[in-house]
Image 1 (cartoon, rainbow, N blue to C red):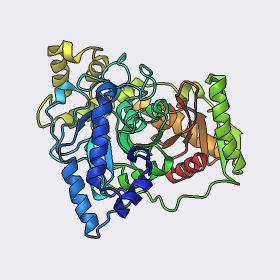
Image 2: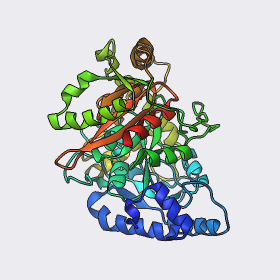
Image 3: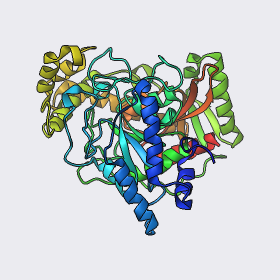
Image 4: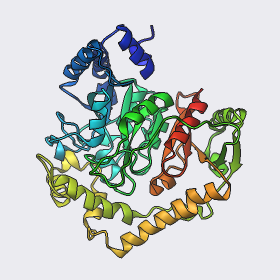
Length: 455
């Protein structure tokens, strides 16, 4: 039998059902790995004190003939900007180290219903990398600096660094990250794991420390597309408190192959090394061998589609964070109080400054502001109408494909889904990914393409 940390979610499920090991033993195994490896990796910010108790309860349910589904008794780590009862929700900040949420985030409620064991919380770039400009990926004042699982000192990607590294180092079978712009896709690439950034609304945002309600979403990170698919199935669901959330049907996944057309951003491939290009060409050949047609594309106004418009995030961050902080159990209860806290604790909290907190606080905080509204309209225009949707319609495409993480920003602004999948490993041990994107609510299509690529 393969070591537990090397097994897929399906293999773990089969082992649990066959009685080869229990969920308690499974949790103990991963806790031991965390205790052994995390002092160097800093990928896990805290363990849940009730994880083993939950595992025992789920073992008892299984023994009594109750099975909640494919994730029954499977441990999972959740990014520490998502509310989980029993542990603090900190966004990596020492200012929120004593904030214990009164209820689970909606997505965590979904995970519990599916039988997942909340093993603990993962480290992140502080406040999901919306605190300052120069903070290294994966650093937080509370959790320290996340280290790469395979190449010490290498970049760990975006703010879900802890979630990506935890999967890569096999500290848990599954993790959840969050993304506003690249924070799932980027770290998944750097850690060489699968990452799904869903359509905004596929996963409820209730109980998640926000940056931008236009772009924020949680999503699964895993070793395989199949594992990410199983986790995503458990995460989706309509939440009455999130006006954008809806139930997304994931079964059956569509067939892909002959007749499927993908647009490919060839210009982005010029950014690759010769070694990376060769690895990605092998992945593209798998798609061609399946009968998929690849069409060269580029946005009609690439400089405007990729343009960064700060007003959208700074205005939405102030409004959303103030709303979240107003309900914290202990700690800063508004953005101005948070800024004051950091000013009072510069040695522990202001290693890299708080430029973005100050920029957000300097806005009017009202979303009726003309500068904000103009920037958001431009984001939608050049990411959707003259961006992804334009290319899909103009060339009669099903989806788009780009190398590594090089196109994450456009679907992020559009609120559209992206799926990144490893296709090879460089000589230095770092993986190289291909990333798919398409219009809203096309996660089933992207997952089907990812499964084909992964075979």
